Amino acid sequence: MIIVAADTSGLPAALDSTHPEHAAATEAILAAGLLVMSPLPLAELDHVATRELGREAALGAIDRFRKRTPARCSPHGSRSRPAGSRGLPR
Image (cartoon, rainbow, N blue to C red; front, top):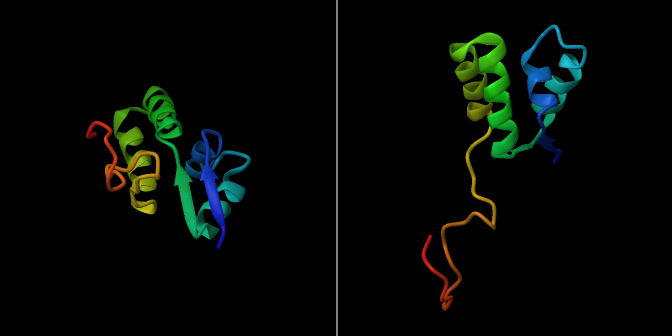
């Protein structure tokens, strides 16, 4: 399985058909068995797309990636705690 970690440079390239790396970025995303994204590049994509293209286009861009990648918690972001742990509930 191919795992792709999407970063700030790859996301706009995949969305912008005039970007020089559009074909490669799109191919990588489509070939991915698992596309991993941090909320930080998504926030930056939202900011740049809103500034450059307007709010509706930014929402559409984020929605395209959201539909491609189901939300999952990382082991560090999990809401469950191991049995017997005494940490504060999240």
